[in-house]
Length: 216
Image (cartoon, rainbow, N blue to C red):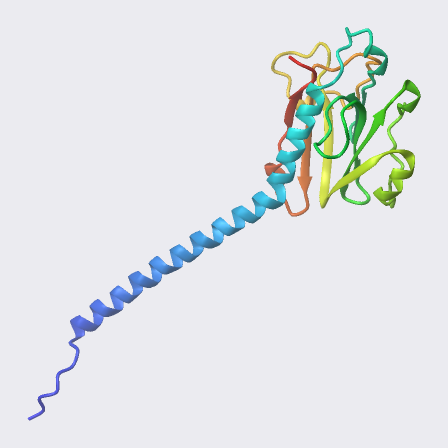
């Protein structure tokens, strides 16, 4: 008589079921980890540069000279275009230069898929550029140092735009409906907006960021 014991059909079914449940749990944990890694990678690639840009622009636009100050009024210069912006401010990134008055510029080079940042110290009105240095296609930003500009850039930018709130804008006006240019002479817009989109970034993830100009 054979006294060897084996698994019953019920025990096999229970074992297979438990293994299946464990596989599902492990696959869900793995998928959750992959999704978290993907979100973290997207955050580092897309949102960190956009957030840093927003913070820098906010501080610089807040530090724009007051037009009512007679001593600083001659140095006010605000040039606004769809793909470029230049203005005078007293704030620049820490460690790049000493205090003073600076002209800064943000210019989108669509051919090079990059957003170029420029800054230079202003010692007299003759140092101020009356036009945006837009002839940047194929230009090495290091070459701009010969013209007094300190330059940096954000790469892999597939689209970038500025918008300027009209002087008689209604309260519910959306940034996408704002003016693409600002021609106010020594005047300043009340608010500006920008939108940046990187390569491989979903267009719906690229939203307008609104920034006030001057101390509100």
